[in-house]
Image (cartoon, rainbow, N blue to C red; front, side, top):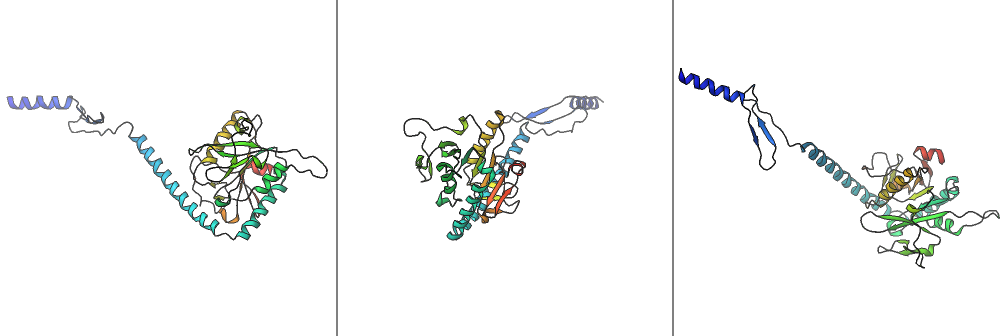
Length: 290
């Protein structure tokens, strides 16, 4: 009888006391014994386990997107390298003529445009730049000169600026032999940065490796244009400016089927494409203005 009483008393102690075993390394609760059952165990994962899992999933997804982009760039690079020089020249002329003859280009007062590099096999912009900078007269009327900003890469951390130039002589080759504006105008004055300008840009002419008809753009992997456009769009929203028109110049072979180009959260879509076959308006902004 005495032994039975001790056993019953021990059961009461076991079922009324709770215990917690914690990892000394993670300081997290592993299981507990509830008053209702001496054999009830509840696993308690670390409080930040979900955030760690989400972060790992996002990293995995970004890695997959990056790999897909690298593969697509490799394929497009081969296509551009194999492009017939005569065909390329014809498409360069056609694309630039379409832009120069368009009302949306003629009506623009301030624009940002890239300076093409033959080694990168970008669509030629020399005729457009010359037209803007030469400021020809039409039918005896003086044409108002457009204000032109062109890119200058500042470092390898995706930092790019758009600086104002008034002549092609303002351009110098950088370390990669790509023409860009010098930081000053030769007499000690800093060139105007578009981010410091008092008026908004009407038009951006953008390069890229591949595009589709939904506005996706595949760049060269440095993130320079996406980072710059994000900053400029933020500035425009802050100042309540009209949204700039983002227009990409594309050879025929650079236009992909929808869904082929992978995108990440930081990728900025374009409003329209200009190919040798004409203008492809995409966004509501483009449909309204083009």
